Image (cartoon, rainbow, N blue to C red; front, side, top):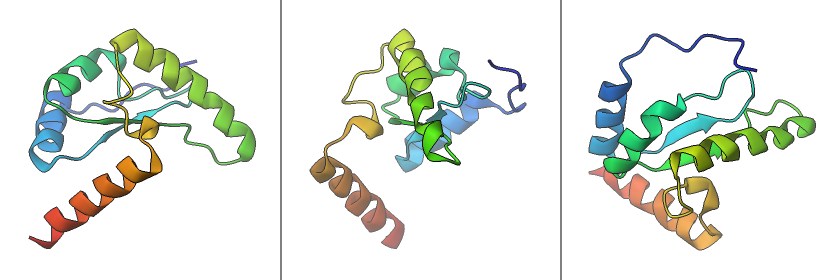
Length: 105
């Protein structure tokens, strides 16, 4: 687990940009990645940035890795309302439509 070092990026700047543009941040649930580092998720949540948990799967078996992302999310206090991956189809479609409208303007 976590055998790969994280990218040397300014997480605070990225979170600020995501908040400004109202885009989600990926929580990559692959056990060798688990980025965004869990320590930055509370900062993103304070700025109303959605988190999206995904398995980074390249094969069907990789979908099981979602459990690691969920564990990380639980550690940070992420709720279903802050997790794009927990949205219903209707909520997700609304989010996509809103994103599309913003891009057009």
